[in-house]
Amino acid sequence: MSRSVLDMSMSLDGYIADPHDYLGGDDGERLHKWADAETGPVQQFRGEWKAAGAILAGRRTAELMDHWGGDHDGAPIFVPSHRPPSPAARWGYPLVTYVSDGIESAMEQAKAAAGDRDVQVRGGASTVRQALEAGVLDEVQIHHIPVLLGAGHRLFDVLPSEIELEIVQVIDTPEATHIRYRVRR
Amino acid sequence: MSRSVLDMSMSLDGYIADPHDYLGGDDGERLHKWADAETGPVQQFRGEWKAAGAILAGRRTAELMDHWGGDHDGAPIFVPSHRPPSPAARWGYPLVTYVSDGIESAMEQAKAAAGDRDVQVRGGASTVRQALEAGVLDEVQIHHIPVLLGAGHRLFDVLPSEIELEIVQVIDTPEATHIRYRVRR
Image (cartoon, rainbow over all chains, first blue to last red; front, side, top):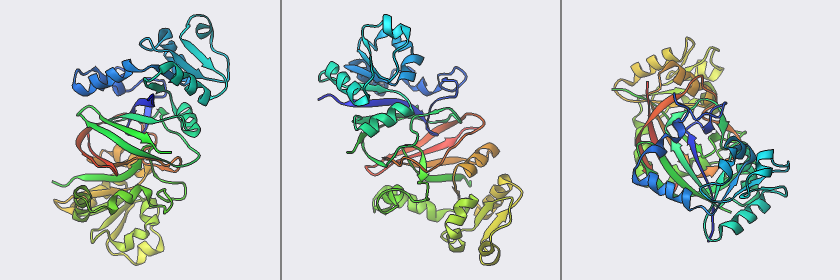
């Protein structure tokens, strides 16, 4: 059974990047530093990322990442957007699909492509809000990083209503507290 | 050795209250629901709150709580504010002290009053920012609640710089993930 999983590293003050899309620290990679380790939890998450059957990415995230070069570890990428794709995404990337009729449709196509594998969701506040509003987000995997970034792009902005979550798993490491939540409907 | 500890319940989207200072849910108490349980972790936190030697509270928080009736489980309350206190705090509460010369001074007085017990910090983004900027916050105990409140008052707003934290303790319960951080200086 394919699930959609938003998987993001977030500072304690709720940021996923600083105002210039750096990730904090002297090297601009602070929020992702935990993933450099070779410990069991990190390997588990790397395994999940690699095992994804498809990616649903917000447009800004996809463009900031240059569409991951055209695929995400071999998985196809679906980008919900009402505007036409940029030239690179129009011409060069057979595994990148822009979906103009909404995030439900994008998720439907991503799940169809993923088969029984998961759809990994990548994006910021706008994509997260749309996915939650449309009811197409099954799980939220947050890597809570012990840092206050101070400013930047938040993962969650204003939502039209409260949404209950259920804690599915907590993995406690010195570098991060990895909490997986299920979205209650 | 007395420590200052910010102890707050926060939704996954970073809110400590909704726009009307309710705490979410049908009964307006969602964020504090975890504290109704009679489990070990809850008793531990209740013990910490009761054991506090003094409270440093942001003015808005203190006023919203009617200064907890004049003391916080018997502990004195210090409120950093450049404006004079409201009539109730001027006339009625011998254990409530408004401190007009800054949060460093307020914390100094709170720690002196607390002796070797902890100072519990209560407040929102403004108080937290001032305490962090002044370097007078030792620890942050966040009760991460599995809910998206959607809107409201955030615990952390913009800070002038990044601040590194250290994870001291993680307590994993179905109702909340309790993470204690030490502020690195």
